[in-house]
Image (tube, helix red, strand yellow):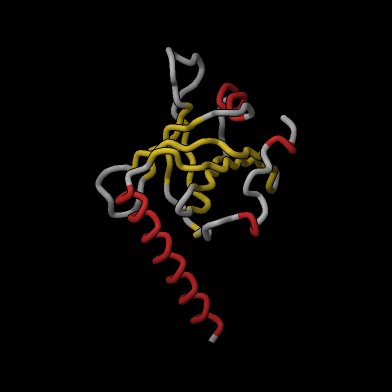
Length: 147
C-alpha cells in the first residue's frame, strides 16, 4: 500500500470539525455487501479521537485479511462503539479514508481514519458529549497538577 493513497483529511487545516480525544472500545469488521468474506472476522480496537463526521480507530492487532481490505478504496467498516455508561453499543458505519501502520516501541499499531456514513444522531451526540467531558476533565486535572 502506498502512503500517498490515503491523504484525505490529514492536515489539520483541512478539517471542518474539531477532533476530540477519546478512548472508546470498538469492535469492527468489513461491511459485507454480498456474500461472505472468508477470513474476515470482528476485530477489536479503540477510538483515538472522534468528531461530528468521523473518528480515528486504533488497534494493535489486525488479521492479514482485514489489513489487505483496508488498503483498498471504497471500504466500509461496521462499527460497535462502547460509550461509557451506555447500556448498548453505538452502531455505525464508516468509510475508510486513510490507513496507517506504525511501529511504536517495537509493537505495531494500526490507525484507520473513518468518515461516518451511518450513525444515529442521538448516538453521535452521546459520544461527543462523553469525549468533551473527558477532555474538560483532563484539562482540569492537568491544570491542577501544574499548581
